[in-house]
Image (cartoon, rainbow, N blue to C red; front, top):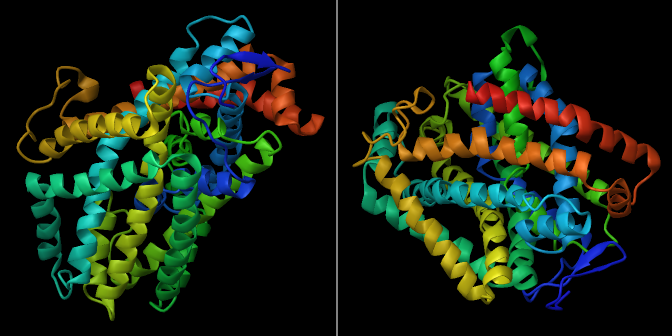
Length: 468
């Protein structure tokens, strides 16, 4: 796959200006894709939005959304990436050329690459919070602190741009070091260590949670649905989060799919990744909620659950410094594997389009992303009163940090996923789809029908709801 021409052989696009590699095995791809999917969304966001939306009923809806929307779109994204064999933008361009489709379709890839870039710019800032908290927990800074003192630690961190910049820089450097080393030496080697380590750390924290006396209450909260506590908004939050947690609409799965060998089943792999991602999210809930309940804290504490509510619990329990440190190391690993995947689509495109080598393209993309992250840092303190699009009611009161989060999660990701579903379901040749999926006729029909009809309607509903 290192020819500089872009030829079509047997219906498959081949050739790249970049010095490309492939995942060494199906397991390597599963670990990488799971690493992308398992991030702050699972360990930070999923527990608190579950708490905010009533627990078990939200989990049921979330699981349905993963199956009916997440998996079909993930299969489509991986399929497009593998068929094109290039960066998301160029894969869509080559497939559109081959199938004589509009030249505008590469814009779908561009939307995804832009979304990944914007997300990483503020995601790295949050990753930096986790790095900071490792030191705070390890040195006993959380031990015996009151709720007000814990709140002061977090607000003090957010109010200190120099400290935020330091940890944001450290996190982005960790991401860039891995991506610069390429597919096998960088991405694959990193996830082969980080993902098993993440699972082990999570299980250790769950083991501790089982000793708190509130594990049964937490399990009931997560798995005993009470649909009267679930609103329409909660259903749409579940749908939107199913989308976000699987790294859909941000070109990541297309980029990773472009390195996927032809003999690997896309359907089985996508289902496996989705199952592991969901298990991690639920396990994170089982790790966090027993600690929350045993300390009489509020499960619907919002975004502060991880950085304010849990530190309060860790600071007032036996061996709290140890388990607090362990938990924030776990959070860093989750954020790191996702950060790697978010930088990859842009780096892959720069390699191909600009002829840059891997190191230079990583430096260029990473430094640009780091620089944009500074705007998010400043919006948490010295620019906290600046709301760039505040003249529009939709964006009223939103700082740069809030704006980037809102634009990506509520507009770019659903839009990207919707366009991927429409492109694969309505414009790509059915023969090409069947060739790439190489699955049974029954499985193909279910996937194809879902992708063409149900998925666009569901994602479109979320998109319109978010706009309104």
